[in-house]
Image (cartoon, rainbow, N blue to C red; front, top):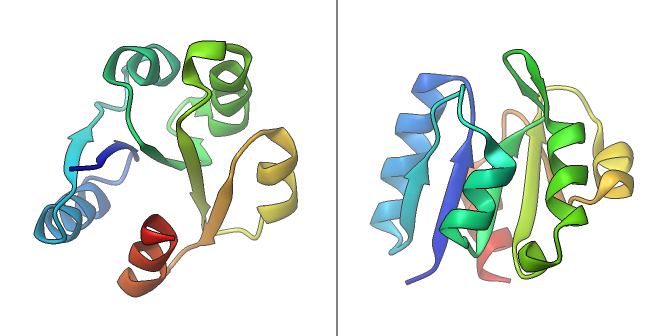
Amino acid sequence: MPKVLLAEDDRTMVALLTTLLKMEGYEVVALDVHQDVASAVTQEKPDFLLMDVHLGGQSGMDIVEAIRKNPSNSGVNIVMTSGLDMRDECLRRGADHFLLKPFMPDDLLNLLKN
């Protein structure tokens, strides 16, 4: 079962995504907003990291760069999300995919399956 690590500071979004992904057969690990995302990726070894660009006081852009600097994280697919269209910058900084919020559940599921 593929593992998805969620780094999102909106608790409602975390609950919705967790339910959706579990119903589709994914193992889901939701991080607390104060956890070190880069360390969690190294420890959890997820297939996917679904991360908001803005995580409270943390920058998702800085986090994705830190993840990409660690060779042991090379297998993780990083999907970044934001209410602002930051696709180009996210991809340039190391994300594999970008979803503009609000996104449809099928958009996320199709991205994870392909």
